Length: 373
Image (cartoon, rainbow, N blue to C red; front, side, top):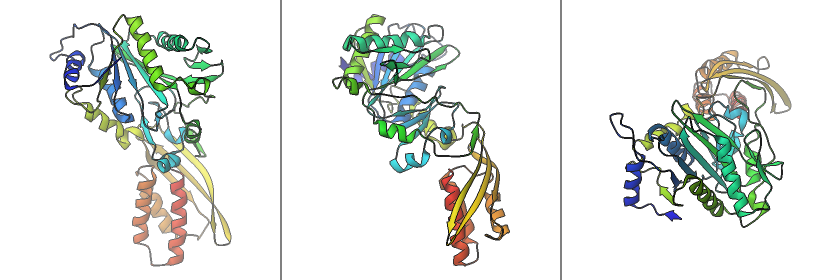
């Protein structure tokens, strides 16, 4: 049963969720099931942060249900250039987000369900949460062959991954979140989670590829709505609470004070890209110019998402050495991103001599440099 999000319900939820001031601990007990009315990945990740930071979980547990419009979500310690096709994300207007938990990269769309289980750190138990989901699936369709693997994935037919897991363990509180593939666009999933970038070396946490399948393929009656309701019902049964799902608006400051600042932080370039562990790129590319094929070698070190060291090895006399040197000097310290590199290149081109041949060569080099990003 879903309780519609009215002002009254929001205020009641605010009273339940908000941590009292002056360090007092809430004495209210009873678990909660809440569901986001937003499909914005940054807003929903911000709700996780807010609950983790503000809710007293000593006497209650919380299940948070949410779905996102198309987005790629990387783990806290991952490298987006290593994990996904950023050019394709930009072309398809698919959001890229970095969550605060570890683990691998996942693709979200409205055919995917996200579930977050909040507890104290002492009560954190991801295996029990995954068993709860499996039990809910079995209650819906007893014939489904689903089980939890040693890697804390949920597998269908012993081989297809339908759910992946990650977690954040705080000092006193914790959350475990997982996906559940209902009817996700698998073609887009496989396309965007394939990095085209060559010569990249990084100590960032790599994702582990897996074959996936939608539950909808197994049984078309298993819609997201049916699955959400079944999981909420099983959670309510195990926690001895009413089967009520309370809807919340992740942009509502009256319910979640300070939530919009958390959302904005998760959208910043400094968080999404700047938190990438240091990495290097050593690659070559060919430039076809008129009747010639030119080999260009590029070496870069990138730290906090900014170029720390850069070297571009061009064929002799193809560009004036001073101009190439100026490009390298400008790139050092700049963001490792297409927009900033394009702006730098355009600015430098403006101070070049008015020479069409030179401009064409310069543009070709800069276009290829941008393709590395």
